[in-house]
Length: 122
Image (cartoon, rainbow, N blue to C red; front, side, top):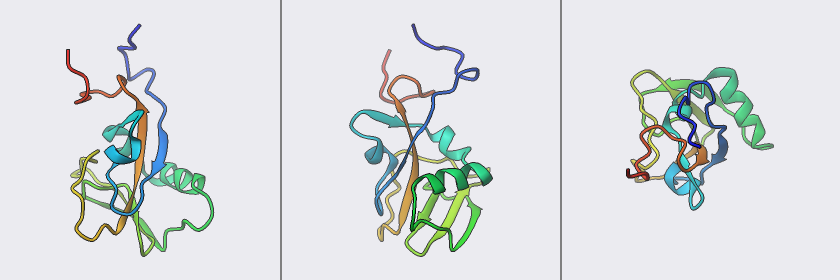
């Protein structure tokens, strides 16, 4: 049965830290898809908890501060951490930066549980 009321029972994120310059679409493949809403909602203490879950050597030298960048949330190669502000729409795909300095925090969920999932055609 499909879970329709996603508000009551949101899918759990499998948080994946992408490699430098990798999109969340790529980071979640081949088995899962990315949830932009969950990525946008990753703020404050929740961001810190996810950051900590990736273990040693991953620390914000600056931030997290908010940005309108659609690649957020991310940590760049200098340790600058960014989360989404109201203007940002965290994207699954690029835009891939030409320099690829960011490692993106990607919420990967089972296919079929993301609202407006482009992979599902009815």
